[in-house]
Length: 455
Image (cartoon, rainbow, N blue to C red; front, top):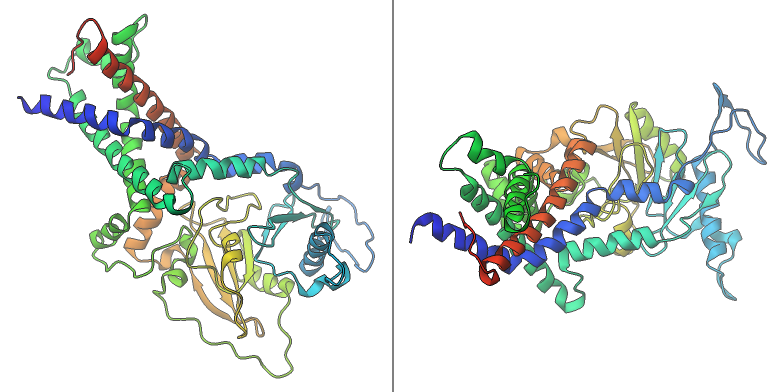
């Protein structure tokens, strides 16, 4: 049997075996490519605020007017308002702390502020409690009126990665999607081999490069399969390779070995700005001593120190303690909005309780001059003196870590901004069409009355 014929049957068998799972991953990938934008649009009513144009009096606060916009309330005041809103919504039972005692708790896992004057301050109390959005000028606290958008996108992620398996079946779902992703990579490469024309002329190339008008039945399916496959091929190869790197430890280690580096002992998280701290590749943060008679810096003072350190900041996510090592890439920090990065903030809710030793302030900052687009900088502060204990960013990473970060964000297209996300989304739609046309051609091959050319 000719080698081309063998390749064709391998291509067909792999497509039939993995087609349904590839269809699920492609369909969910369309939504996940625009996850941040979808969430931001759904919550636009609570995330966006209107800065007052005139100075307004506020009890207990002397506001200053900066140009034509009233200065925002102190960050600690906004934090207190968010805690009061959380306590009042919890309906405390008899004997439980009241609203008057909320200044010392509950624990805040992250506060995100934006340089955009029309963005609310996002206060995160953990994954279970969620995010409270505080108007920085009035102190009004709002929450998303519904979690349906978050729930929908979380369901899409569960199907995309685990086929919605839970409990003991979750690793099984992950193994299946991982294997089918590799099968998709094989289908992309073998499809190019099969597509490659024996003769390069207009008559042969035209039906393989563009849609033929009036085609129907098997001719239409063959034409669509070739055209969609050809134009989606570059993006699909990137998506499947990056998916393998995300899903398999051995694939991630290959990235480091290709760069001539030893793979890190700890699996990297989705937050490139925290890579040095999370991977343990930089010296450990020095132990913090509590100076006698010195009070801990407030969140407002820590934020001011961070802002002075990075003048061109866009968004700052401030937390007490270091970011978790493991990330949960459900929602990422997007330029121009106050969306919290669950990989480095919300997942802290499931982390162990804070140790008794003093914890530093740490902040993840996205600045105007960040390059590439997904890069962030992490700064760790002494909570008593404001001294910068460490500062790490994309430029401080090794070549292997940079490549790993690129592959992580190329998988959703975010590495190239909205054009990259659009390409990833269109390629995912193309994946759905490839599954449909592939099944249709297979059905006609095995059950149709007439045979159709296979190569």
